[in-house]
Picture 1 (spheres, one colour):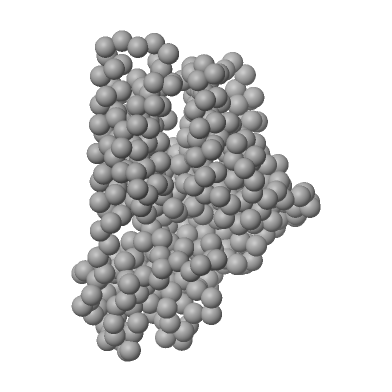
Picture 2 (picture 1 turned 90 degrees about the vertical axis):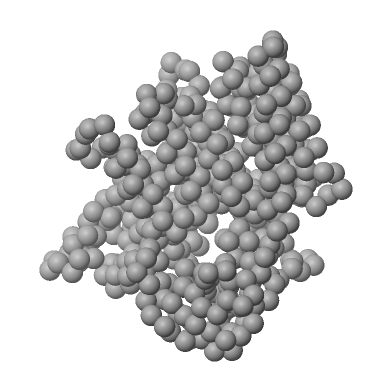
Length: 466
Protein backbone atom coordinates (compact mmCIF):
# COMPACT_ATOMS: atom_id res chain seq x y z
CA UNK A 1 0.00 0.00 0.00
CA UNK A 2 1.20 3.54 -0.76
CA UNK A 3 1.17 6.62 1.45
CA UNK A 4 -2.14 8.03 0.19
CA UNK A 5 -3.90 4.74 0.90
CA UNK A 6 -2.35 3.99 4.29
CA UNK A 7 -1.50 7.37 5.83
CA UNK A 8 -3.40 10.19 4.06
CA UNK A 9 -3.37 12.36 7.18
CA UNK A 10 0.41 12.55 6.94
CA UNK A 11 -0.05 14.61 3.77
CA UNK A 12 -2.68 16.77 5.52
CA UNK A 13 -0.33 17.30 8.46
CA UNK A 14 2.59 18.31 6.22
CA UNK A 15 0.46 20.74 4.20
CA UNK A 16 -1.11 22.32 7.29
CA UNK A 17 2.24 22.70 9.07
CA UNK A 18 3.80 24.44 6.08
CA UNK A 19 0.83 26.81 5.78
CA UNK A 20 1.00 27.63 9.52
CA UNK A 21 4.75 28.25 9.26
CA UNK A 22 4.02 30.85 6.54
CA UNK A 23 1.15 32.41 8.50
CA UNK A 24 1.24 36.18 8.14
CA UNK A 25 2.92 36.06 4.73
CA UNK A 26 1.23 37.56 1.63
CA UNK A 27 0.44 34.07 0.30
CA UNK A 28 -3.00 32.84 1.52
CA UNK A 29 -2.63 29.83 3.81
CA UNK A 30 -5.34 27.87 1.99
CA UNK A 31 -3.46 28.19 -1.30
CA UNK A 32 -0.23 27.00 0.35
CA UNK A 33 -1.94 23.98 1.91
CA UNK A 34 -3.75 22.98 -1.26
CA UNK A 35 -0.69 23.24 -3.50
CA UNK A 36 1.57 21.46 -1.01
CA UNK A 37 -0.96 18.67 -0.55
CA UNK A 38 -1.37 18.09 -4.28
CA UNK A 39 2.38 18.39 -4.84
CA UNK A 40 3.24 15.83 -2.16
CA UNK A 41 0.53 13.45 -3.41
CA UNK A 42 1.80 13.57 -7.00
CA UNK A 43 5.44 13.14 -5.93
CA UNK A 44 4.95 10.12 -3.65
CA UNK A 45 2.52 8.20 -5.85
CA UNK A 46 4.00 6.54 -8.92
CA UNK A 47 0.78 4.87 -10.17
CA UNK A 48 -2.49 6.68 -10.60
CA UNK A 49 -6.05 5.59 -11.16
CA UNK A 50 -9.47 7.11 -10.58
CA UNK A 51 -9.53 6.10 -6.91
CA UNK A 52 -6.18 7.72 -6.16
CA UNK A 53 -7.21 10.96 -7.89
CA UNK A 54 -10.31 11.11 -5.72
CA UNK A 55 -8.31 10.44 -2.56
CA UNK A 56 -5.73 13.09 -3.52
CA UNK A 57 -8.52 15.60 -4.15
CA UNK A 58 -10.19 14.84 -0.80
CA UNK A 59 -6.84 15.12 1.00
CA UNK A 60 -6.24 18.51 -0.68
CA UNK A 61 -9.68 19.78 0.34
CA UNK A 62 -9.17 18.63 3.94
CA UNK A 63 -5.74 20.31 3.94
CA UNK A 64 -7.21 23.61 2.74
CA UNK A 65 -10.00 23.50 5.35
CA UNK A 66 -7.53 22.61 8.13
CA UNK A 67 -5.24 25.43 7.10
CA UNK A 68 -8.07 27.98 7.02
CA UNK A 69 -9.25 26.84 10.44
CA UNK A 70 -5.75 27.20 11.90
CA UNK A 71 -5.40 30.67 10.38
CA UNK A 72 -8.71 31.70 11.91
CA UNK A 73 -7.60 30.42 15.33
CA UNK A 74 -4.25 32.20 15.05
CA UNK A 75 -5.92 35.50 14.23
CA UNK A 76 -8.47 35.22 17.04
CA UNK A 77 -6.73 35.90 20.35
CA UNK A 78 -9.14 37.38 22.88
CA UNK A 79 -7.72 38.99 26.03
CA UNK A 80 -9.78 37.97 29.11
CA UNK A 81 -10.47 41.53 30.26
CA UNK A 82 -12.69 41.87 33.33
CA UNK A 83 -11.78 38.52 34.89
CA UNK A 84 -11.21 38.94 38.63
CA UNK A 85 -10.82 35.39 39.97
CA UNK A 86 -9.59 31.96 38.98
CA UNK A 87 -7.56 28.89 39.89
CA UNK A 88 -3.78 28.61 39.65
CA UNK A 89 -3.22 25.80 37.13
CA UNK A 90 0.54 26.16 36.74
CA UNK A 91 3.35 27.67 38.80
CA UNK A 92 6.96 27.80 37.71
CA UNK A 93 10.14 29.83 38.21
CA UNK A 94 10.59 32.76 35.81
CA UNK A 95 13.98 34.26 36.45
CA UNK A 96 13.88 35.73 39.93
CA UNK A 97 10.09 35.69 39.95
CA UNK A 98 7.31 33.12 39.81
CA UNK A 99 5.00 32.80 36.83
CA UNK A 100 1.49 31.66 37.72
CA UNK A 101 -1.01 30.65 35.05
CA UNK A 102 -4.48 31.42 36.38
CA UNK A 103 -7.55 30.02 34.63
CA UNK A 104 -10.92 31.66 35.08
CA UNK A 105 -14.32 31.82 33.41
CA UNK A 106 -13.06 33.98 30.51
CA UNK A 107 -9.73 32.33 29.75
CA UNK A 108 -6.24 32.09 31.19
CA UNK A 109 -3.73 34.78 32.21
CA UNK A 110 -0.17 34.72 33.48
CA UNK A 111 0.94 36.71 36.52
CA UNK A 112 4.66 37.21 37.25
CA UNK A 113 5.16 37.97 40.92
CA UNK A 114 7.88 37.71 43.56
CA UNK A 115 8.19 34.23 45.13
CA UNK A 116 6.73 35.36 48.47
CA UNK A 117 3.56 36.61 46.73
CA UNK A 118 2.95 33.48 44.63
CA UNK A 119 0.27 30.86 45.27
CA UNK A 120 0.52 27.09 44.91
CA UNK A 121 -1.02 25.22 42.04
CA UNK A 122 -4.62 24.26 42.78
CA UNK A 123 -5.25 27.46 44.79
CA UNK A 124 -8.21 29.72 44.03
CA UNK A 125 -7.44 33.42 44.09
CA UNK A 126 -9.19 36.77 43.62
CA UNK A 127 -7.44 39.93 42.52
CA UNK A 128 -7.67 43.58 41.62
CA UNK A 129 -5.59 44.92 38.79
CA UNK A 130 -5.51 44.96 35.02
CA UNK A 131 -5.01 42.44 32.22
CA UNK A 132 -2.69 43.47 29.41
CA UNK A 133 -1.86 41.89 26.02
CA UNK A 134 0.99 39.39 25.86
CA UNK A 135 4.45 40.83 25.26
CA UNK A 136 5.49 41.09 21.63
CA UNK A 137 8.89 39.59 20.72
CA UNK A 138 11.88 41.83 21.31
CA UNK A 139 14.36 42.59 18.55
CA UNK A 140 17.45 40.41 18.83
CA UNK A 141 15.86 38.02 21.35
CA UNK A 142 15.29 34.55 19.83
CA UNK A 143 12.80 33.63 22.58
CA UNK A 144 9.24 34.57 21.58
CA UNK A 145 7.45 34.88 24.92
CA UNK A 146 4.10 35.60 23.28
CA UNK A 147 4.10 32.34 21.33
CA UNK A 148 5.34 30.47 24.40
CA UNK A 149 2.33 31.50 26.47
CA UNK A 150 -0.20 31.20 23.63
CA UNK A 151 0.94 27.58 23.17
CA UNK A 152 -0.09 27.05 26.81
CA UNK A 153 -3.54 28.58 26.38
CA UNK A 154 -2.62 31.94 27.97
CA UNK A 155 -3.94 35.05 26.21
CA UNK A 156 -3.19 37.89 28.64
CA UNK A 157 -0.78 39.17 31.30
CA UNK A 158 -2.22 39.97 34.71
CA UNK A 159 -0.68 42.97 36.49
CA UNK A 160 -2.17 42.56 39.97
CA UNK A 161 -2.51 45.29 42.55
CA UNK A 162 -3.65 42.83 45.20
CA UNK A 163 -4.21 39.06 45.23
CA UNK A 164 -6.01 37.15 47.98
CA UNK A 165 -6.52 33.47 48.70
CA UNK A 166 -10.16 32.36 48.52
CA UNK A 167 -9.84 28.56 48.85
CA UNK A 168 -8.40 25.32 47.54
CA UNK A 169 -9.67 23.61 44.45
CA UNK A 170 -10.61 19.95 44.42
CA UNK A 171 -9.57 19.10 40.90
CA UNK A 172 -6.51 17.71 39.20
CA UNK A 173 -4.36 20.76 39.97
CA UNK A 174 -4.97 20.44 43.71
CA UNK A 175 -4.03 16.74 43.46
CA UNK A 176 -0.81 17.73 41.65
CA UNK A 177 0.03 20.18 44.43
CA UNK A 178 -0.45 17.54 47.15
CA UNK A 179 1.61 14.96 45.26
CA UNK A 180 4.37 17.50 44.62
CA UNK A 181 4.56 18.34 48.33
CA UNK A 182 4.75 14.65 49.28
CA UNK A 183 7.52 13.95 46.77
CA UNK A 184 9.56 16.95 47.94
CA UNK A 185 9.29 15.98 51.61
CA UNK A 186 9.65 12.18 51.35
CA UNK A 187 12.19 11.23 48.69
CA UNK A 188 15.99 11.56 48.28
CA UNK A 189 17.38 13.96 45.63
CA UNK A 190 17.73 11.84 42.49
CA UNK A 191 14.54 9.83 42.94
CA UNK A 192 12.69 13.03 43.83
CA UNK A 193 13.89 14.82 40.70
CA UNK A 194 13.08 11.98 38.31
CA UNK A 195 9.61 11.33 39.76
CA UNK A 196 8.77 15.03 39.76
CA UNK A 197 9.64 15.06 36.05
CA UNK A 198 7.86 11.80 35.15
CA UNK A 199 4.73 12.24 37.29
CA UNK A 200 4.21 16.02 37.32
CA UNK A 201 6.28 17.42 34.47
CA UNK A 202 8.44 19.46 36.91
CA UNK A 203 12.15 19.81 36.19
CA UNK A 204 14.90 19.81 38.77
CA UNK A 205 17.56 22.38 37.71
CA UNK A 206 20.46 20.07 38.56
CA UNK A 207 19.02 17.18 36.58
CA UNK A 208 18.23 19.48 33.66
CA UNK A 209 21.87 20.60 33.57
CA UNK A 210 23.14 17.00 33.70
CA UNK A 211 20.83 15.69 31.00
CA UNK A 212 21.50 18.70 28.78
CA UNK A 213 25.20 17.75 28.80
CA UNK A 214 24.35 14.12 28.11
CA UNK A 215 21.87 14.85 25.30
CA UNK A 216 19.08 13.02 27.12
CA UNK A 217 16.95 15.99 28.27
CA UNK A 218 13.89 14.37 26.66
CA UNK A 219 13.81 11.91 29.59
CA UNK A 220 12.77 14.80 31.84
CA UNK A 221 9.86 15.90 29.62
CA UNK A 222 6.62 13.95 29.75
CA UNK A 223 6.40 12.55 26.23
CA UNK A 224 5.40 9.56 24.17
CA UNK A 225 7.94 7.45 26.02
CA UNK A 226 6.23 8.04 29.38
CA UNK A 227 2.68 7.79 28.05
CA UNK A 228 3.47 4.60 26.15
CA UNK A 229 5.14 3.14 29.23
CA UNK A 230 2.04 3.83 31.34
CA UNK A 231 -0.23 2.29 28.68
CA UNK A 232 1.95 -0.83 28.38
CA UNK A 233 2.10 -1.32 32.16
CA UNK A 234 -1.66 -0.79 32.47
CA UNK A 235 -2.29 -3.33 29.70
CA UNK A 236 0.00 -5.84 31.43
CA UNK A 237 -1.98 -5.75 34.67
CA UNK A 238 -3.89 -9.00 35.40
CA UNK A 239 -7.36 -8.10 34.25
CA UNK A 240 -9.19 -9.10 31.13
CA UNK A 241 -12.51 -8.77 29.47
CA UNK A 242 -13.83 -6.84 26.53
CA UNK A 243 -13.58 -3.49 28.39
CA UNK A 244 -9.86 -3.73 29.12
CA UNK A 245 -9.10 -1.07 26.52
CA UNK A 246 -11.45 1.33 28.31
CA UNK A 247 -9.73 0.84 31.69
CA UNK A 248 -6.31 1.31 30.10
CA UNK A 249 -7.57 4.47 28.38
CA UNK A 250 -8.86 5.90 31.66
CA UNK A 251 -5.57 5.23 33.49
CA UNK A 252 -3.56 6.69 30.62
CA UNK A 253 -5.58 9.92 30.45
CA UNK A 254 -5.49 10.28 34.23
CA UNK A 255 -1.69 10.09 34.06
CA UNK A 256 -1.55 12.66 31.23
CA UNK A 257 -3.68 15.12 33.22
CA UNK A 258 -1.72 14.64 36.44
CA UNK A 259 1.54 15.05 34.50
CA UNK A 260 0.47 18.45 33.20
CA UNK A 261 -1.07 17.63 29.80
CA UNK A 262 1.93 18.82 27.75
CA UNK A 263 1.59 18.88 23.97
CA UNK A 264 3.91 15.89 23.52
CA UNK A 265 1.97 13.86 26.09
CA UNK A 266 -1.39 14.72 24.53
CA UNK A 267 -0.11 13.75 21.08
CA UNK A 268 1.07 10.39 22.40
CA UNK A 269 -2.14 9.77 24.33
CA UNK A 270 -4.29 10.51 21.28
CA UNK A 271 -2.16 8.15 19.21
CA UNK A 272 -2.44 5.36 21.79
CA UNK A 273 -6.17 6.03 22.07
CA UNK A 274 -6.60 5.54 18.31
CA UNK A 275 -4.71 2.25 18.61
CA UNK A 276 -6.86 1.13 21.56
CA UNK A 277 -10.05 1.94 19.66
CA UNK A 278 -8.72 -0.11 16.76
CA UNK A 279 -8.20 -3.04 19.13
CA UNK A 280 -11.72 -2.61 20.54
CA UNK A 281 -13.27 -2.52 17.07
CA UNK A 282 -11.04 -5.27 15.69
CA UNK A 283 -9.62 -2.92 13.04
CA UNK A 284 -5.96 -2.06 13.71
CA UNK A 285 -4.96 1.32 12.28
CA UNK A 286 -1.80 2.46 10.54
CA UNK A 287 0.66 3.62 13.20
CA UNK A 288 2.03 6.43 11.02
CA UNK A 289 -1.48 7.63 10.20
CA UNK A 290 -2.35 7.53 13.93
CA UNK A 291 0.59 9.83 14.67
CA UNK A 292 -0.57 12.21 11.95
CA UNK A 293 -4.20 12.17 13.18
CA UNK A 294 -3.13 12.87 16.78
CA UNK A 295 -0.77 15.65 15.70
CA UNK A 296 -3.41 17.25 13.46
CA UNK A 297 -6.00 17.13 16.23
CA UNK A 298 -3.73 19.11 18.54
CA UNK A 299 -2.83 21.58 15.79
CA UNK A 300 -6.50 22.23 15.03
CA UNK A 301 -7.24 22.71 18.73
CA UNK A 302 -4.30 25.09 19.37
CA UNK A 303 -2.26 26.05 16.27
CA UNK A 304 0.25 27.89 18.46
CA UNK A 305 1.64 24.47 19.40
CA UNK A 306 3.37 24.45 16.01
CA UNK A 307 6.04 26.78 17.44
CA UNK A 308 6.41 24.75 20.64
CA UNK A 309 9.67 22.78 20.58
CA UNK A 310 8.16 19.92 22.57
CA UNK A 311 5.34 19.47 20.04
CA UNK A 312 7.69 19.52 17.06
CA UNK A 313 10.19 17.12 18.62
CA UNK A 314 7.37 14.79 19.65
CA UNK A 315 5.80 14.70 16.19
CA UNK A 316 9.04 14.24 14.26
CA UNK A 317 10.33 11.56 16.64
CA UNK A 318 7.00 9.71 16.62
CA UNK A 319 6.82 9.74 12.82
CA UNK A 320 10.38 8.44 12.53
CA UNK A 321 10.02 5.68 15.11
CA UNK A 322 6.55 4.56 13.91
CA UNK A 323 7.74 4.32 10.31
CA UNK A 324 10.99 2.59 11.32
CA UNK A 325 9.31 0.01 13.52
CA UNK A 326 6.75 -0.93 10.83
CA UNK A 327 9.31 -1.53 8.07
CA UNK A 328 9.39 -5.23 7.34
CA UNK A 329 12.84 -6.58 8.04
CA UNK A 330 13.94 -10.06 9.10
CA UNK A 331 16.64 -8.98 11.56
CA UNK A 332 14.74 -6.80 14.03
CA UNK A 333 17.85 -6.17 16.10
CA UNK A 334 19.13 -3.97 13.27
CA UNK A 335 16.04 -1.79 13.63
CA UNK A 336 16.43 -1.63 17.41
CA UNK A 337 20.10 -0.57 17.22
CA UNK A 338 19.52 2.00 14.49
CA UNK A 339 16.52 3.64 16.19
CA UNK A 340 18.51 5.83 18.59
CA UNK A 341 21.01 7.28 16.06
CA UNK A 342 18.20 7.93 13.58
CA UNK A 343 16.07 9.70 16.19
CA UNK A 344 19.08 11.79 17.17
CA UNK A 345 19.69 12.71 13.53
CA UNK A 346 16.10 13.81 12.82
CA UNK A 347 15.69 15.86 16.02
CA UNK A 348 19.20 17.36 16.40
CA UNK A 349 18.56 20.42 14.15
CA UNK A 350 15.55 21.51 16.22
CA UNK A 351 17.44 21.09 19.49
CA UNK A 352 20.53 22.93 18.23
CA UNK A 353 18.35 25.63 16.65
CA UNK A 354 16.87 26.40 20.07
CA UNK A 355 19.83 25.75 22.38
CA UNK A 356 22.62 26.60 19.86
CA UNK A 357 24.33 23.19 20.27
CA UNK A 358 23.35 19.54 20.60
CA UNK A 359 25.58 17.01 22.46
CA UNK A 360 26.91 14.15 20.37
CA UNK A 361 26.80 12.05 23.55
CA UNK A 362 23.02 11.77 23.10
CA UNK A 363 23.43 9.57 20.03
CA UNK A 364 25.39 7.11 22.16
CA UNK A 365 23.55 7.28 25.46
CA UNK A 366 20.05 7.03 24.01
CA UNK A 367 20.80 3.51 22.82
CA UNK A 368 20.64 2.43 26.46
CA UNK A 369 18.74 5.36 28.03
CA UNK A 370 15.22 4.41 26.92
CA UNK A 371 15.51 0.70 27.86
CA UNK A 372 17.14 1.65 31.17
CA UNK A 373 14.55 4.25 32.13
CA UNK A 374 11.66 2.02 31.07
CA UNK A 375 12.79 -0.09 34.05
CA UNK A 376 14.11 2.62 36.37
CA UNK A 377 11.02 4.87 36.37
CA UNK A 378 8.44 2.16 37.24
CA UNK A 379 10.92 0.77 39.78
CA UNK A 380 11.32 4.21 41.37
CA UNK A 381 7.56 4.79 41.50
CA UNK A 382 6.92 1.37 43.05
CA UNK A 383 9.68 1.61 45.67
CA UNK A 384 8.65 5.17 46.57
CA UNK A 385 5.07 4.29 47.51
CA UNK A 386 5.86 3.32 51.14
CA UNK A 387 7.80 6.53 51.73
CA UNK A 388 5.12 8.69 50.07
CA UNK A 389 2.43 6.98 52.15
CA UNK A 390 4.39 7.58 55.37
CA UNK A 391 4.85 3.88 56.11
CA UNK A 392 7.68 3.24 58.64
CA UNK A 393 10.81 2.02 56.91
CA UNK A 394 9.79 3.52 53.56
CA UNK A 395 12.90 5.71 53.46
CA UNK A 396 15.05 2.54 53.55
CA UNK A 397 13.29 0.96 50.57
CA UNK A 398 13.67 4.04 48.38
CA UNK A 399 17.46 3.67 48.64
CA UNK A 400 17.18 1.05 45.85
CA UNK A 401 16.06 3.43 43.05
CA UNK A 402 18.29 6.19 44.43
CA UNK A 403 21.30 3.90 43.99
CA UNK A 404 20.17 2.90 40.51
CA UNK A 405 19.87 6.54 39.41
CA UNK A 406 23.31 7.27 40.90
CA UNK A 407 24.73 4.39 38.85
CA UNK A 408 23.14 5.85 35.71
CA UNK A 409 24.65 9.26 36.48
CA UNK A 410 28.09 7.70 36.85
CA UNK A 411 27.82 5.85 33.54
CA UNK A 412 26.44 8.84 31.64
CA UNK A 413 29.21 11.09 32.97
CA UNK A 414 31.79 8.85 31.30
CA UNK A 415 30.67 9.86 27.78
CA UNK A 416 29.73 13.50 28.36
CA UNK A 417 33.12 14.61 27.08
CA UNK A 418 32.08 13.97 23.47
CA UNK A 419 31.85 17.18 21.41
CA UNK A 420 28.68 19.15 20.72
CA UNK A 421 27.47 20.20 17.29
CA UNK A 422 26.08 23.63 16.40
CA UNK A 423 23.15 24.34 14.10
CA UNK A 424 23.90 24.38 10.39
CA UNK A 425 21.94 24.01 7.14
CA UNK A 426 23.80 20.75 6.52
CA UNK A 427 22.39 19.33 9.75
CA UNK A 428 18.89 20.22 8.53
CA UNK A 429 19.58 18.56 5.19
CA UNK A 430 20.74 15.42 7.00
CA UNK A 431 17.65 15.42 9.24
CA UNK A 432 15.22 15.77 6.33
CA UNK A 433 17.11 13.13 4.36
CA UNK A 434 16.96 10.68 7.28
CA UNK A 435 13.25 11.18 7.90
CA UNK A 436 12.51 11.16 4.19
CA UNK A 437 14.46 7.92 3.69
CA UNK A 438 12.59 6.13 6.50
CA UNK A 439 9.17 7.23 5.22
CA UNK A 440 10.15 6.42 1.63
CA UNK A 441 11.24 2.89 2.52
CA UNK A 442 8.11 2.41 4.63
CA UNK A 443 5.74 3.52 1.83
CA UNK A 444 7.84 2.28 -1.10
CA UNK A 445 8.56 5.69 -2.64
CA UNK A 446 11.33 5.65 -5.25
CA UNK A 447 14.68 7.20 -4.29
CA UNK A 448 14.36 9.94 -6.93
CA UNK A 449 10.90 11.01 -5.77
CA UNK A 450 11.82 10.88 -2.08
CA UNK A 451 15.01 12.84 -2.78
CA UNK A 452 13.05 15.63 -4.48
CA UNK A 453 10.62 15.80 -1.56
CA UNK A 454 13.34 15.74 1.13
CA UNK A 455 15.35 18.43 -0.67
CA UNK A 456 12.33 20.71 -0.99
CA UNK A 457 11.49 20.21 2.68
CA UNK A 458 15.07 20.87 3.77
CA UNK A 459 15.25 24.17 1.88
CA UNK A 460 11.90 25.21 3.33
CA UNK A 461 12.97 24.40 6.92
CA UNK A 462 16.24 26.30 6.49
CA UNK A 463 14.34 29.28 5.06
CA UNK A 464 11.73 29.38 7.83
CA UNK A 465 13.79 28.54 10.93
CA UNK A 466 17.25 29.95 10.14
